[in-house]
Image (cartoon, rainbow, N blue to C red; front, top):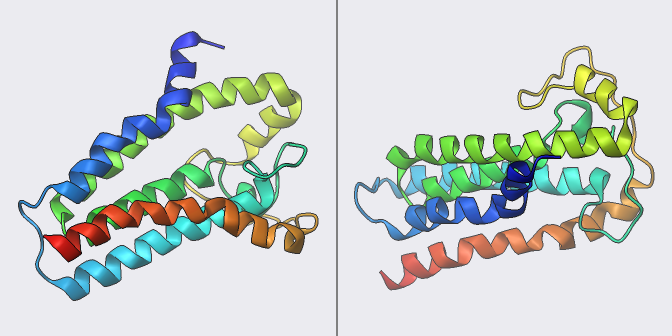
Length: 186
């Protein structure tokens, strides 16, 4: 595993912070149509949160359980649903803040950061899971989900992981706090 790659992995959240802070703190060029901002922003944020929770139910990343190669749930359709969810969340926050002009920049920042992160993760997962992960990579696309002709596989004990997955992802709601405070006080 390359050392430069691990830096992207370890700093992936911090690398997005300047873009997140800009989107909630900058007030130039805001769209004043509140119904557009709030409805579109809330839908994008909710899609991202849903993707993270659905992914967590299958991946168990933040849950105290043995990790295995995840081949169910959203991982049947795309290899990186959590990063796609993060992109939806951050795009939703940008829209909620009214900075529609900043949306393409946020998407590009997420795409670049998460792509670099995934390059490291893929090499790590190839070492960890071997041929099983290589076959997964051949079958499931990295970024663009495939739905047609894909066989859904039920995960084991999904009900068992429903509430723990929601609780594991509740911290995402904290991203809304600075935006709410800005709307209240500014």
